[in-house]
Each structure stands twice: as structure tokens, then as C-alpha cells.
Length: 98
Image (cartoon, rainbow, N blue to C red; front, side, top):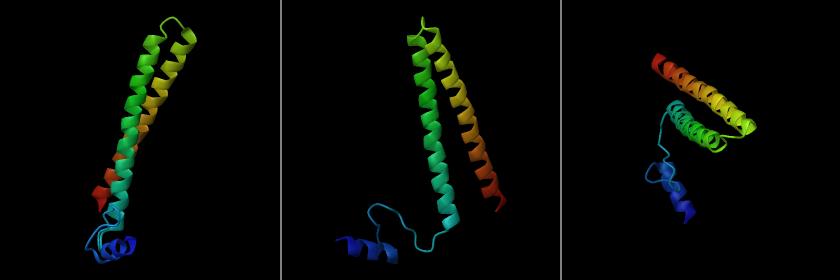
């Protein structure tokens, strides 16, 4: 059953197990789409980490060392989120150039 699906995907008539393989598509645009998707998921993960660190900070209200760890986690996650947004901006600049 796998051989006909691969053959159809190579001919542009079907999909290969759910993967959309365009016939004659632009590999550059495909890579840009993949990188943007990965950066979007990582940004979502960063937001979740900020929320979890905030909850951890609230729960550890009387433990100063845990509160400091939560503050560091929030700081590093926000720095990471800024790097992610900067990466997306750089990709969009390069896409706009062409």
C-alpha cells in the first residue's frame, strides 16, 4: 500500500502519508514555512514557560530560593522570546528582499 502512495506523491496526484509534497514547488519557501512554524511553536512554549514560572513564583511565596529561580526562569524565557521574535523579523526581512 505504501508504494502507490509514494508514486502518487511523486506524480503530484496525492499525498505521501499526510505530507504535502508540491510538484515543482519552491524549496526556499518550504524551508521558510517550516522555520516560521517551528519559531511559532517555540514562542508558544516560551509563553507557557512564563505562565508556569509565574505560578511557581506565587506558590513559593515564602521560599526565597524558589522565588529567585522563578524570577530567573521568567527573565531567561523573556530573553529567549525576544530572540525568537528577532529571528522571525530577520526571516521576514529576507523574504521581503526577494
